[in-house]
Image 1 (cartoon, rainbow, N blue to C red):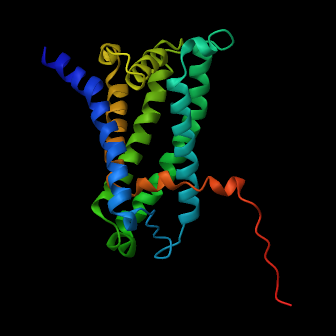
Image 2: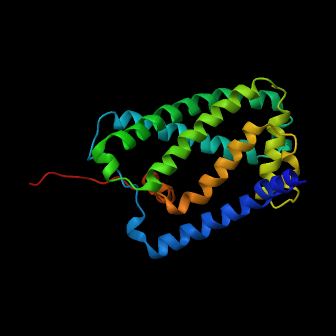
Image 3: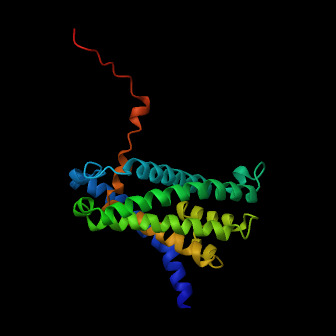
Length: 227
């Protein structure tokens, strides 16, 4: 009975609490603490392996984000006529696995630097280290789920998790019921992911809102030498 209550609490209500904190927390921080709305780059303090680590981490995590966004929230009927669920899962394993490795390696390099480089550690806050540690842990869990997914390539587990995510996002109700027979590793992966979303407004992750997409459509700047 308690486990059922806990399941509904974590996978039925917790996502909405995290989502509320995510949206309103970001809005309040932008409105009241704009000077903290930054990446807080520490590259000037130590640039050794920074470019490699940062590129691996960002390429990996961006690929993972959009993979989860479209993979989990696209209804099955949209692609059922031309893409089998098992094939979709296999694509997710290959692409997600490669992105997960990149994110994990890059994130681990950044975390090691933040923990053991004296100058970087001195300029880091507790939240900086905590959120990076959680992201590295989450990437590790994601790779473990890949191993579990190799044991059932029919796509059924992927459809179950997608149904849970769609039920949460589209307010369908009964979301927690989808998690009843799901393995612990997927449950832990989802729980950590929701927690990261809730901590988002209190960390440097808020710089994601300020991604410079305007540069894509901005007109070229002409720079001329003086007479």
